[in-house]
Image (cartoon, rainbow, N blue to C red; front, side):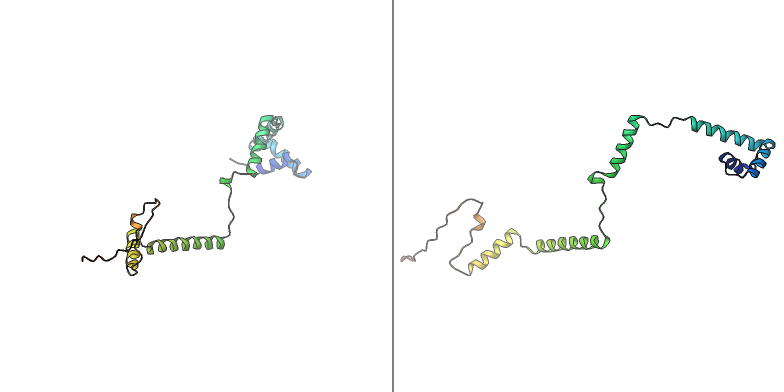
Length: 154
């Protein structure tokens, strides 16, 4: 069972009651077993708190200071980047647009064989130029162009 006066026991110990209320509460403590036990528990707890040594050990103090300093300067991978939402949206749209542009550009570019065929067909229209790019393997090449004279025997 709980007594309704239990909260007032704590107020009595802390000195928050007037003289008349404190006198009435002391009289109640003499008569009520629950409140007197609560008063004894509060007083024992107060004595244990006063008896406790709160001095920090040197290594605990240094470790605590290191932890405080470490939280002020987190490593780069733990830092948050503060970018406003509209700016992030614009950057995302720009990234998608560049990706689409590059994909479409690559899809329109002719492959190696198609490009050489296209060059050959355009070069056949002019008699003086012949495309030898399919024979090129990255070495230096000297190409001489010799005009044939129509032979008389034909």
